[in-house]
Image 1 (cartoon, helix red, strand yellow):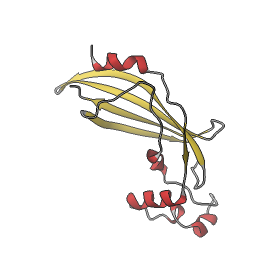
Image 2 (cartoon, rainbow, N blue to C red):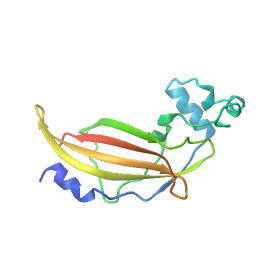
Image 3 (spheres, rainbow, N blue to C red):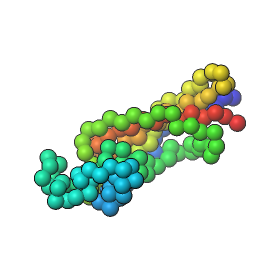
Length: 147
């Protein structure tokens, strides 16, 4: 049985929502780590003068959230390559927001090339408020090279 066949039964399964609290200090540290000096991510007085009215998180800040795990789905510790990341934004994430994050396996397939067979696993992560209204959706593709 190929790896894609092993993972296909999990396609469509989703993690339980995980609560994440967005902290001002974490936003500042993330902006520092990516080298973004934008005062919108660190200066409350400046942020008040913008259309946002307060500090917002940088666009890729959601990568720091806990999205939970698809039940009974285990990935190996080795042989993984992060192949792709896509983001679809609906509204900004503000310092002080409480968000709920889910992770869902949406596809599992194989491709064969010069290096052999590779398994592609596509995940969709959603960041939403308590009512389920999304802030953003992100898709990530992981390549598993196998045993």
